[in-house]
Amino acid sequence: MERYTVISTDCHAGASYDKGGFLDYVEERYHDALRDEMARLTSEQAERMEKLFASEFRSEQDGTDEAIDGGRSGAWDPDRRLQQLETDGIVAEILFPDGSQNNAAPFAAAAGPGAVGADHALQTVGAWAYNRWLAEFCGHSEERRAGLAILTIHDIDESVRQLRWAHENGLRGVLLPSGVGNLPFYHHPRYEPIWQACNELGLPLHTHVGSATPDYGDLPGSGAIFAYESLWLSHRPLWFIIWGGVFERNPDLKMVFVEQGADWVPDTLRIMDNMYLYMFQHEKQRLSLKPSDYWKKHCYVQAMFLSRREARMRNQIGVANMMWGSDYPHYEGSWPRSKEMVARALEDVPELDRRAILSENAARL
Image (cartoon, rainbow, N blue to C red):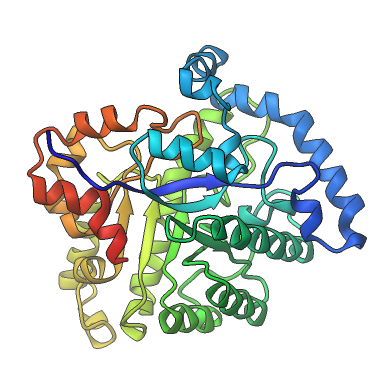
């Protein structure tokens, strides 16, 4: 049986809401506000989880031996995390913010400027708290953990400070909000210092499903609508950044689309290429490559729910542009059955392509 190195490019971490958690990473003047938020989120957690995942599904997932032995505490316990991931066949990981276990980044920092009730000043406080905590957390096993800094975008000078601090403190990339709220979209020149800093520092941009989505209200189907539309909203920065010339001006900039599936890529690129080649030929004066070529050079897609269909589409998507992730420790992820799920999805895929998708592309990035 072949053995493969596996890197998960989608895992989640966040501090617990008790001693040693995020309270230790914000100034004392924000403690009362953070305690209030912690209490509110804790009271809402059960209702939120029930909307997303039926209790029967969660009970089944929590009934595994691995979940019983320590639960999902690896979200903030570095030693437990290492043991659980090793058992699941994963040797290294990319870390995103969490929120599944009363451990969200403070003040909705990871939710973007369009989050319901977002306070931009407090989001900045929360981003710094999370980034400091994450840098220390990754330091427990820095050769295996690549943390992504939360980036706030309402103050661009502040954004650049966050990026430079992240790079200096060992974080490996940045979480870009999928939505911009009432701010200009990503083809606007106000964001150029962010793109230039990421290009210079070698910090890949990441968009992740579920951030910056509208308020769907407490209405029938709102959870399912959120889950469906959040995929498209997370794809959306791609066309702003390509048509906005961001990759043209920043030749070393990389971007990763996470937990959004991968089968959307070929049709999206086909439509964009047709526009470039036929409908908007004047764009060739600004853009030296067609959109699919920018994709090949600059972009990656992480297929958490990797299906056999997506595996068969790998050459259309780009074998060199595909990665895999377990979504640990989330209910919808593959933990603790990642080895079985990967083997099933990649059963008919040649060895070289398997290695590229499971680790080599991520390691290169």
